[in-house]
Amino acid sequence: MKRALVTGATGFIGHHLVQRLIAQGADVKCLVRSLTRSADLSQFDVTLVQGDLADGPSLAEAVKDVDVVYHLAGLTKSVSDLDLMQVNGDGARNLAIACAQRTCPPTLVVVSSLAAAGPTLGSDLRVETDAIHPVSKYGRSKRAGELAVIEFADQVPTTIVRPPIVFGEYDRDVLHWFKMLQQLGIHLTPGLRNYYYSVIHADDLVSALILVAENGSRVTGAAEDDAGIYYAACDEVMTYSDLGRLIGDCVGRTRPRVIRAPMFMIWGLALGCDLWGRIRRHPMILNLDKAREAAAGGWACSAAKLRRDTGFVPAMSLEERLRQTADWYLRENWL
Image (cartoon, rainbow, N blue to C red; front, side, top):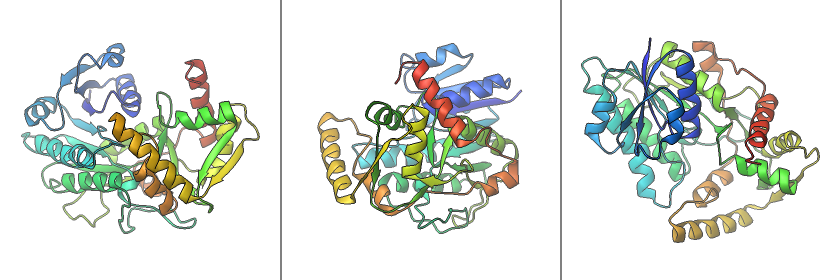
């Protein structure tokens, strides 16, 4: 029976991963910052280890006696640029150090982001051999995390997975798309050009993570080498507008109104949200960093290498996954 540690287990992707690992008979440990704030994990047969990515001794304790470490913990947004780099960059380094200190280091699977690699132009799909050019502070912090674990490639067997937009049950960020479409019948699309996007459901991402832990290649010490790095995405690629129309259909809005907002409007909204977030000390979903990503081009990637190396296949179509998510939101009264 595999023994696994999951960081970021209280997040929505972590919830899906813990559930799957337990269903497969794994012995699961979860690194949590607060035991009192981890009530959602009490429904699972897991061992909670209190600790933090900045606390070396707690990480050393967490990685004891495990075969695989799934590193999901991180920040997607923050009012502080320093926090992004400390959590996403330095945190990944600290975890790699803890794994390297083991006599027999565990396999380390790091969930990075398409943002770490950068956008695409036109209808091209990003592949692992493409040049890296993150455009946002978030993307640069995730790339810093990648480079940090690559430094320990000769000591810790490591694989990096870069998902695009992740959606699914328990997610509160993409929920806002569903809410706006259901309640107002509106889908706000940034910019006046059509760019293409990839997405993936959390369950399919979890399948990819487990597959690379078992059969994926591992990174080498060379930052420019694509070995051990994978994009994980569903097969369908579509424009942001078409994605909104598909979600609209899932929530009963068969003809949603797609509103194209010029980028100067997006920048203005993002600035206002950024300022409000700093006042409240709580980051907003729309901020200047996300506006940088929206203005940079498309965010589409190919999972062909992942499929070739591990046999990864999404369990359902994108439409089926969106409908599954919408049904869950409705059933749980999130919509």
